[in-house]
Length: 248
Image (cartoon, rainbow, N blue to C red):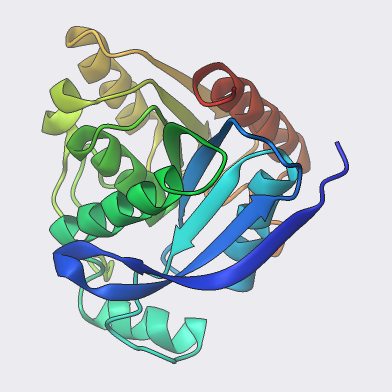
């Protein structure tokens, strides 16, 4: 694997037919049959760290696309300013999020070399949105990295204005991988256990892993919350999971 790739900003058709910005990374391996991943950015926004994650998928053989979920709210703004605008509005509406992920999935399926399989991954608020997308669209694999507010509503004072969506578990369209921290409060281990139980009750395939000594955002190498041991094992779980459901 030489990890050669091409990354660039593109325009895709999102919810309601809107044209929005997105970041695309594709391997330069000449493959005629590759899986794809929609990367859902965290609440801090369409930033360099999540673009790096998008390129990481391409370096490992997947076409990856991250839609800018805040593009309509603050076109041309810096990631920090766009995130502040989005927070002031209570976050991205669920319906709009699903429409944007649907547009991203369609874009990926239309790329040369696509095998038609598309997964989704999200971090923080994006973890919840990954679950939401997998329950609203026909996808092939979903990864939830410490997504809160699936089981419980946001705590008082949090800018995110969303409702619990655990009731959508029956609509999950694909296998789900969940990666969580034992020291996290949002979601707390009790919440992820409740989500696992709800998925068991409706017979939906899933595997959850909770890491001791890790809290929220343990994948983020640019934050004090980073936990190398948990992150390395988490990435290995992701490669195995996508290798089973997306590759080839």
